[in-house]
Amino acid sequence: MTKANVYTKLLAFQKLGISVKKDGKNPHFKSAYATLNEVLDKVKKPLNDLGLVIIFSPETDGLRTILYDTESDTQLDGFMKYVGIGNAQQLLSCNTYFRRGSLVSLLGLEDEDDDGTKASVPVPPKAIVKPKLLIGTQVFKEAVAWLNKPDGNLEAIMKKYDVSEEVKQALLEAVTAQ
Image (cartoon, rainbow, N blue to C red; front, side, top):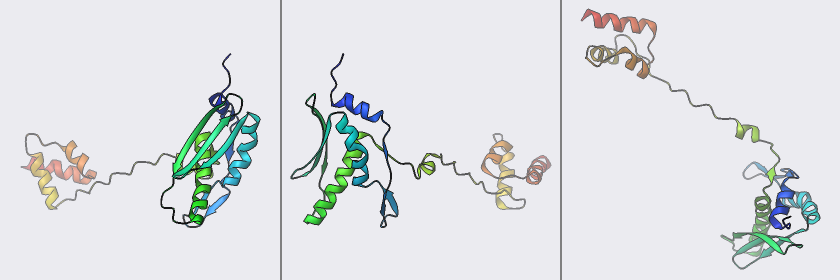
């Protein structure tokens, strides 16, 4: 039997199917997100029950998040580099953001799907709008001339233009009249 380590315990955690709710609102981007408190409330006890400890270690260049297995002495970690930090307030805000983001990523968590139906519905391809071929226009005259060439055919014209039955008949009559 294989000894449990951080990876086998992470698998056991993921099998629990834990998801987090988007309980925070970002008015600037008009979006919702799962707060750090929501993430920790949902994951800390199940992880601890498996013998895993969450460690957030601020370093000079960024924040390291560690999932440490107390029984096997194995760990999984991720690092997020600080960018554009000018003061302590920005650093604290960045750490909160990184703690939440790195934990969600390392654990493979899913946000509660409040708008996923929109994201999962395939976007129908845009309809190709062909220009209408109208009797008496310069394009109509060019189509007749092209049909009179050895390689000219009506199918090619119908692929390029919206051709009504009336215009189709007029094209055929114009070709046979010449």
